[in-house]
Length: 144
Image (cartoon, rainbow, N blue to C red; front, side, top):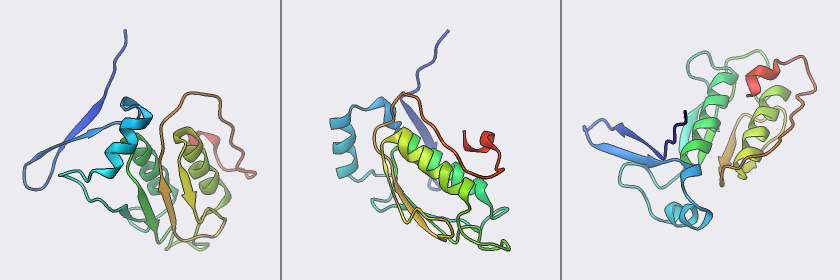
């Protein structure tokens, strides 16, 4: 059995159905063109993510970057781990972001330990073998 998903459709606060093509469903040229044309249902600027919401830890980083890669949407994440005793990116968070960057062929700015904000622009998702080493006792399963 197999399943192919080319787009996700969500309903915005006004009840409008908004399709989002998944990055892997578009070829490189189509992806470039899609990024130039603002979507009716989304903002043309990077999506702003507040990293201090919910438990204010690494989960929002991992989920935001993974969804950004799937949807081909740029994100800026600020206030990373703001409520923690050591705010900012720890080694395992940084390595998780870099892994998503590599899988998506994207770019990541301000990617350093201790950074309290990062910007991620995904590229074309690609198959392959990827390695990541947080260099700490951080759980590798949280990076997948």
